[in-house]
Image (cartoon, rainbow, N blue to C red; front, side):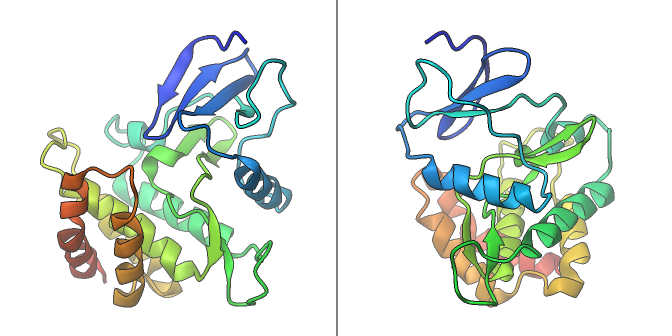
Length: 226
């Protein structure tokens, strides 16, 4: 199968152009995408902004995802370019989390649960002409919304503590803005942060250096909370 131009690579997958309308997301470990597709279809039916799911493509692997081709920068690219500020970006992330958590669970019978993205951070938000679209649902699950808020905050704090972060790319204002926006929803509690730290520590795709910053990242979130 001819996949076309490589558009981007993440920790687990590569994204290739198929044509002007569709891309192919291919996991390098050939992960099963059944659950990811189910979650995207489910939240999309509620109007949550996810890429459209494309038709089966001849020659694609059963574990490949054919998705709508999105045009625009990621939130991570837009911030240093000055297309929006930390306050606006924090409000956007908080709104996306809030809208997602308003969707009832697809599988869980616990009424306190909701759909969780568990990896909602600036690199997984695309700013298209039609608005923000959330990508990469491979970590999605169901559970209490506080865990999702804590995962997003902890990821931002971990990035903020990265000594290799380019000059002028300070993430702390965004973290503070996100936490301020989430305060009325319960913010990121110490208990939720502990669960998020455990989950990230078990993530096989984090480097040892990233795992080593998790304790300090938890403290940064708590110190940055209003």
